[in-house]
Image 1 (cartoon, protein in one colour):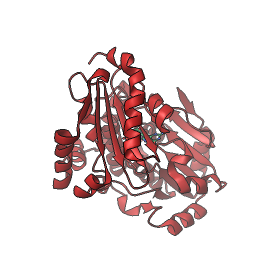
Image 2 (spheres, helix red, strand yellow):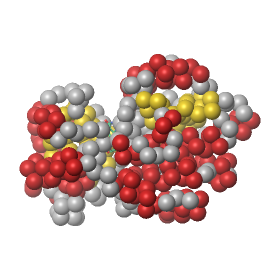
Image 3 (cartoon, protein in one colour):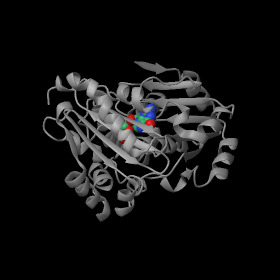
Image 4 (cartoon, protein in one colour):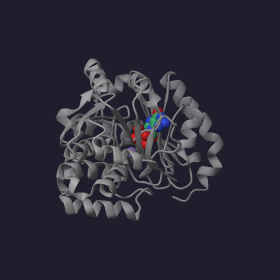
Length: 342
Ligand code: 5GP
Ligand code: MN
């Protein structure tokens, strides 16, 4: 499914109607979120439009090398600066998320700002808070969408090396290096066009994946050795971490990224779950194989959502309660899980 209601927006951007673009993305932005916001930042800057990128929170150090990172304002760290930028801007782009509640207080400010909102996103079921949308849930990533939108409306000459360096990063991370089901032929066409502009894919890969701290490496080892539970009757792998463990390994933002994938790498496992007792909430990550729709499961029991095979959720209840609830609820999906070949 697709929505493209941006033709008036494109004309207005070309006519110079908008002088200051405000771009934001989801809580704890990942590679696609930062890649798409900073990619769009470079494209808008090339078009001569003043552009500000505001994130609701901090993000992983492994993304801090992205060109343009030094211009980003973190709302949690500098709320007044972010509010001033919102007041000064005349249009808001929301990238890689589609419910304003996912960005908490910043979402409330955006809702009441009374400015046009542009949604560019690939998650299921967008809320209708936008004025213009470029949305496609079959797209691999928001970076793929930003690239094709900019190419088709403003031409490849307005997409420079800095832009494609950011955009390729999200294409690569959201597809798990072009391995997940969301990788389609268009993803590779877009990747090829990015390479023609000047993507250094080897360097991007190294900067994203070969940057583990020693603590993070030990945390992964500890989780696989001591914490991995296999729920054999449900073909499920489960890891959960409490606050003491997070402190012991000095876990910082981004350190647990990718950990949930290890469960799914085990032969015979079709569902992998990671549950972490973060300070604000208990956060959950779900990954599945085949037809098991983790976004529906996360939405039904843990106030979450996401994609068919990759989703997340959250709970205000204590860690033990969340773990027990997961173990109980998953029982009713036993047959469905066992029917999946792995
Ligand atoms: P991750 O497990 O990497 O945090 O998230 C996987 C996917 O699920 C991402 O596409 C993300 O957008 C979505 N997701 C993660 N947490 C939540 C949540 O609390 N609510 C919703 N609706 N989606 C989430
Ligand atoms: Mn994404």
